Length: 259
Image 1 (spheres, rainbow, N blue to C red):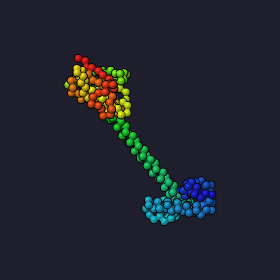
Image 2 (tube, rainbow, N blue to C red):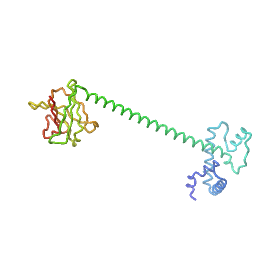
Image 3 (cartoon, rainbow, N blue to C red):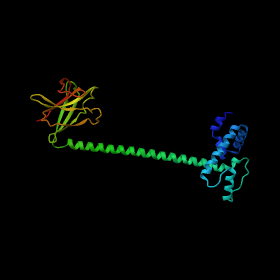
Image 4 (tube, helix red, strand yellow):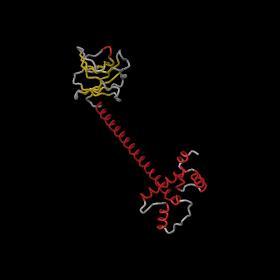
């Protein structure tokens, strides 16, 4: 017999708790009489239960017989049962302790579940709040784009990228433009889009800055300050950091302001 496996199976705890059938009890009893290691393990389990009982029970607890006597004194209807060994007198206590441990485990699991529910609720509330903020921003943007003072300037694709397109919404009163760059492809690594305000005659470009957050910006709409008296707008692809003047061979989109 593998003593360690037998102990690890938990049958000795059930034996001490009185949870086995009569036949199983007899089989275990026979085994522990044969193997001193198992008898020592049973005594260790009994001792642990005694210690737990002493910690929760008011009164002197020195043996299983003591517990039996205490129960008999407090409850006159208790019928003494003849036991073949001292451990059996504690079977009810052991069963109660086992039941208590199960209840404690269930309470712990329930508290953990509640904690998980609270965390999920907080995460959901955060998502809802984020959605509300996103919706509020979109509604604000729509109000801006629908303003009667807004000038819409379509930007068509050029030789560098014929399929590209964009649109500038310019509010001269606030000196701001809102660039919708959804029609531009993602810039290659190490490159960045740069926006230009243009005077036609003579051709004079003024940089309005680079779209450094192009990839991260899901809406692809950028608010840009523009105090210039612009006659056209253009977008070029430039090295990271931008350029002092536009690279005309990398002109992606261009559009003139209607007079």
